[in-house]
Image 1: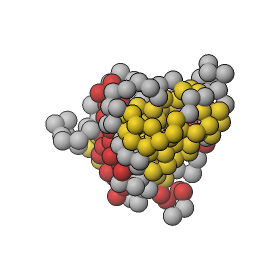
Image 2 (image 1 turned 90 degrees about the vertical axis):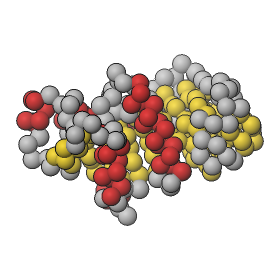
Image 3 (image 1 turned 120 degrees about the horizontal axis):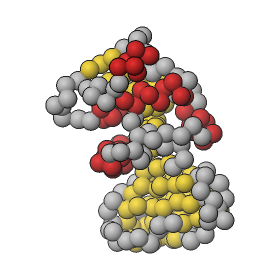
Length: 218
């Protein structure tokens, strides 16, 4: 599918900085807003094709700013978050790559953690996932290999959501090769990219958290 058909950006309620990396990532994407995440649409200069949620975090002036965007309301007492509903709608429309913008940081750490867990689950189902605040990015690492294009000297960490086997990290200040990481270990925290970093994993579930604009590792 063309990118414009298979890549969806979900606008969520967390922090979002308009960095060049963010603009490149969402270029050509389709957009769905989840409740108060619609506030990012104007800053990004985009008009989502759908707006979902219980609208408990949407101010009246924001509703008035996008009168032509179809709204799909849900009751407050529902069995899924607004973000999960938005992702489901994107998948129903043919999404294969999902960018969760505003998924990190913000006032609700429970929501931010849930976004990370959901992203890992979706990655295991074969979806291409990116979570971003503009300044910080997260990419699931499940069995297989990925490569992240990071500036030399930028910081990244690998957070294991289970024990990890066969973990390899290449082109980093602290490389690993076929490493077994016990669950809860802080070993792969605060590594430094030497440029594009390659990761591979035999088994387990993890998230790579990167700070592309933090060059304190230089």
